[in-house]
Amino acid sequence: MTKKITKQIFGKTFFAALAFMVMSIGAANAQTEHGTCGVNLTWAINDQTGMLIISGTGAMSNFTLSNSAPWINSLCSGVVINSGVTSIGNYAFYSCTSMRGALTIPNSVKSIGDYAFYLCNNLTGDITIPGTVTSIGAGAFKACSGFTGNLTIPNSVTSIGEEAFSYCSDLTSVISLNPVPSAIKLGVDVFYFVNKNTCVLKVPAGSKKAYQNAVQWQDFLHIDDGSGTGIDNIQQATGLKARVDNGTLHIGGLTAGKTWSVYTISGTLLHQGIATGDPETLLVIFLQRGIYIIKSENKIVKVVY
Image (cartoon, rainbow, N blue to C red):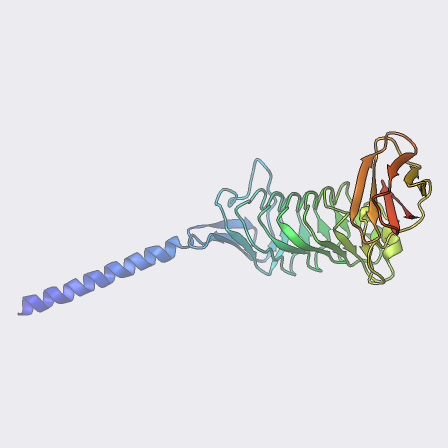
């Protein structure tokens, strides 16, 4: 009888210990990949969720194509950057195409490095740069085509590197909170291949004219400072002329090889061509009577038909 009880107790104890070991191993394996990514920063990937978590305080290390971030080949499902991180390193999440969903950058971040999120094309929603960031590196969000919402640039930003938001082709709007566009140093082609015919540039009240005259910002067809709707940057452009005569639209002042476009007053593209001579002509018998916008390079003119 005693032996039987002892065997039962032993059996229960053994299986309880075995179950504890299995659970312990499972818990350990739930977060097996980890390491450091800065003097006081750590990273870890939860094996069950695939989520990459950056924790600690201070600056993140910078990486390169040949010395990439340690998580690059880990197929992370997303990233959580905890408050306390003060910079996002160069090439930190370069080509992390497995990362999906929204991106949240904490208010502790002051700089975003070169190509930090380049080719993270499955991140979605808005790009909201926090009001603590002063610099955005070259190509930082290049080819992040999954973002279909708003890009918000706070007035704390003083420099944006070349092609920082290039190929973010489906953005709905760019919101710049600085009333003085010249206060932001822009690299070349910051918004290259952003659809500037449909993406609305929203700026502080009273700053529309400054943005209309600012290099790169002026490329946006719709500039809205809250004072009106539709195409806001209509002005008689020096050198660009348009008139309708006997059912034909005549456009003068074009540069050979440059694109010219015709829009409705609400911004719908009706026709586009490449200037081969001066003037260009277009039959307008298919148009309804109204006001139309002609745009070529950074020049815009209004014509009444």
